[in-house]
Length: 159
Image 1 (spheres, rainbow, N blue to C red):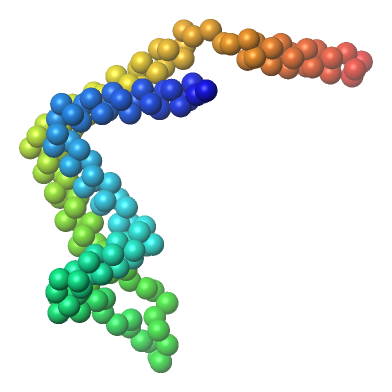
Image 2 (cartoon, helix red, strand yellow):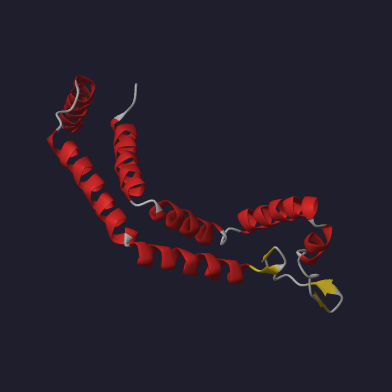
């Protein structure tokens, strides 16, 4: 049995899914935006780079060798504490900017940003509307009554 939170989450996903189906470029723009944000996570960026390099190595070992990150800088005989993250041999910022620019162009050119924003607003409005007008179930009523009863008893016991 699902809770209301799960039902609300499913409702929001369905409304956003319908919006994305009606505007297919919104799916691609969302994926590119999510990747651009995910590249800020060091472990995600490193594992993404490793998986891409491994896949490229199967087809072109020379290209995969060029995709290795540069050596760590050495300061006074020790590796630098500031470790830069590289994706496919390039600085992470390059990939973040590239994916952000591509997602911005898709959002802007397809007009999907406004469409998906309206889907968010509608889904949140429906969720808030339902949450305000629904009557609580018996278990919630009993819990409320029990808490009120305990609060009253605490006041009597303090006297």
